[in-house]
Length: 397
Image 1 (tube, rainbow, N blue to C red):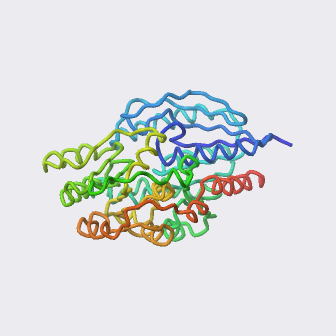
Image 2: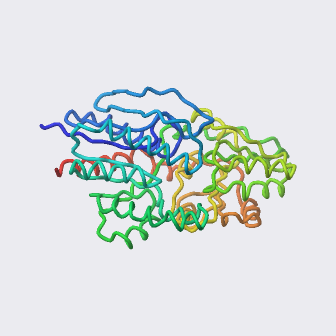
Image 3: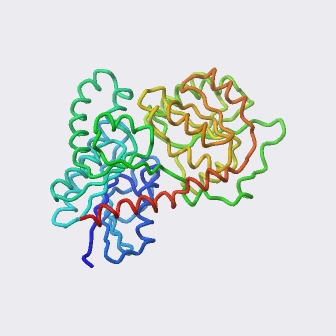
């Protein structure tokens, strides 16, 4: 049988800390588990760079079975848009250099900020092979909310052209959120679509006895934990200071992560003299799970933007798998998903502190495994189906 080669493009990959990294790693692990002798995969990604405050060692070139990983070392950058643009240009130039001269039968690109998908479209067009896209966000829809009006006014037409080129180039597009469907069906009605969502990684599939913890001391503070990015999209600076001030010593917030709005959150806490919020840098997954298990309530929040009504945060899956009460400031599809799929969850409108306080009082602050949810959304099972789908496009060639 003739050997088939897949080029997989992802800005994030293990051991980096991000939803894109965890998702792409699980996909590659499923390919490895298949042990397909006639299928080779080249992964072009970056060395860990998600958070400047959290660094992990990784090899720039690594081969395991049929998978070869090329990790590009990016120049030092922060979370600002200009820095991110420079980092991506560096990544794209090096990715094209690495891929040059190699023959591929399929290009797979996973992307939240559009440009990795556009890079995949460019490579696939040049090689005249099918393009399979895995889309984790709608960049053109998001920039109108997260950028200033003037900046968005000038940038949106440019990125709309890139989006059109990218999706018109795709043989197939997977959407991680069903909430994205109306956007794509309206603009690209002939797109071949699938809906393989994020899921629960093995590290969160704990024994039921592990989910139980000693709990807080009677009369002690309730420990509320948030872990993840601290940027404009999460809007923590717009909600946590108000909540912490309201609850006082009754609740302790522990926030793990980094991002462009962390400084603003820190300043707000200092200026208001709030002492029941503790901020920590990003930590490894193993450490984070220990922190999850020691918490009483897990907190999730997205800013009050229309674009975020379409998303389904990957954080929902790891939170729900741990059996902890979930306190979530989300709207749209994420709110619908939580209400229909997850038990013991209190949903409130984003950035609405009054409704958040009322929702918190409805929570049953105790641990309870969510067996049906865990069975339905195991990442391995989802990735098995997705790999089958990817291979169907490869075999069609």
